[in-house]
Image (cartoon, rainbow, N blue to C red; front, side, top):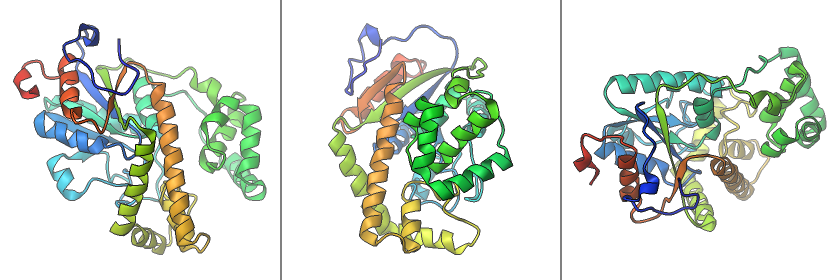
Amino acid sequence: PWRNSIGCFDAGADRFAPMPDPRPPILFLMGPTASGKTALAVELVKRLPFQIISVDSALVYRGMDIGTAKPDAETRRLAPHRLIDILDPTQAYSAGQFRIDALREIAAIQAAGQSPLLVGGTMLYFRALERGLAELPTADPAVRARLAAEFAQQGSPALHARLVRRDPAAAARIHPHDQQRIQRALEVCELAGRSLTELCAYPHNEPLPFRIVKLIVAPMDRQVLHQRIEQRFGIILDQGLIAEVAKLRARGDLHPDLPAIRAVGYRQVWAHLDGKLTYATMVEHAIIATRQFAKRQLTWLRAESGALWLDSLADDLLECTMAYLHQHRFFPKTPERLC
């Protein structure tokens, strides 16, 4: 019953009426980077009893504010975000831990009589929350160390080629230079004797005590998204991204192989500070990497079922969103607040 193309909809059309479901709703507000998700979420919190849960693998880290476009203090005063600034950059965070944390926060928000609004662009986290996670083997230090040595000797493209042979579906999803994800996929193959794709086809998922309503916002024109990405990177450079990364480097306990430092923008600036990239090349690589990241996000988003797509630059975006929430009975007792 949902539209698959970007655009608004007729709020009164019967085809958008959801099937009856007594469970309380939660809203997934998804979209590619630089699409305006946070701005829309803040507008919703101003008007309705929502509380925001961040769904972003980089916003969890303290001290990484500029490069992640973390909401500023005033925005967070108006619309507090849960699951932001919960880890030090030395620590790892997983989809499994996110699911545990998100379920806890959802329960707390609902207990307070409000509705959870999950906002972000880490699609794996959204999927882990909705579908659960497969039972994967735990990391083996010996296997991990050997694979790391092979990466150092042979390079990421060679190990990615090995993954193509062992798990072509996973290799198609993972960038040839994404060492962390290539290594984990190969590690799973060795430890489980089955591919990551095979194991993830049978996730462990307990029934959720709420119904999920999905909204995807993105610019209708891909070139517009590319322009916004380039403009935003220029803004965060002006805001002091290089100084922020320099401060992280000066700690002495961080390195480029950590998940936090591998975040887009941070790893390119780190390489620049190491003298491996000129300033101009760093900017170019960071923008290209962000566009590639957005492309992967859109690939994930197109696979989402039951989601409504809206043009994030449309003049009536907020109006359409409010009508969509009303259709899904988020706040049925106060329809006047939806106008």
